[in-house]
Length: 258
Image (cartoon, rainbow, N blue to C red; front, side):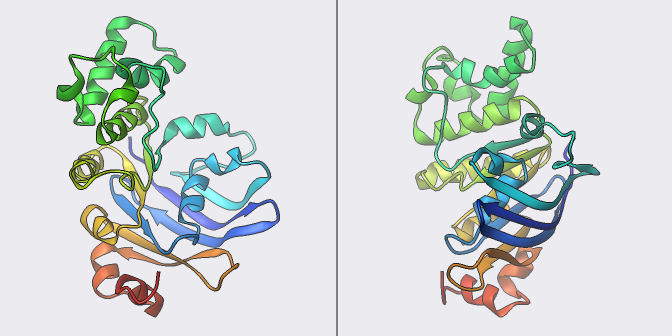
């Protein structure tokens, strides 16, 4: 069941350095929300606060609230590992587990969740690979290493691995930046299909990609060098790209800076 995210007054730190400041937004269920903005403006940091991956970095902290439906993900009794199961993540570079087969890459999270019966695993691995539009390409070599696939196939394998455990939200941090145009198109088509089942948030430097795949777009920027990143505006993607309300958004989209 896809869920809605409500963020209020979120500020994230690396030690004493404020990386992003006072960000509030809503991410609607069964939609794609894209984060755009110049390098270093906090897009990826903010993305990682949504499933508490930010905390993996030593001395990284967060203030403010992130609600998944009505549950505070930073509540005192909330297990960060459980949050990361509910809110899956796909990273910039494909990162299949190098020593594992294609099958075992997808099955890894399922086994951690206690699924052990081979028949059940087989069915769920196939379902996930089909959902990632990869099944027909790998069904005859499931026992071969995942790292032996092409870059685009590896990224779809990582998506299959992320969705196998049925998360409610899928975060994607520049999932196409290391891929060729054909593989990029395959991932974009996949994102459009997956939003029927998941709430999706994607960070991208490619504004054409944001325009193609997202329903809403959020523009982030820095007030000045050395200042924390801020959310400048968020709106329907069509409006952001045709008639933004803030001049800085228009300047970025039109290529005047960034």
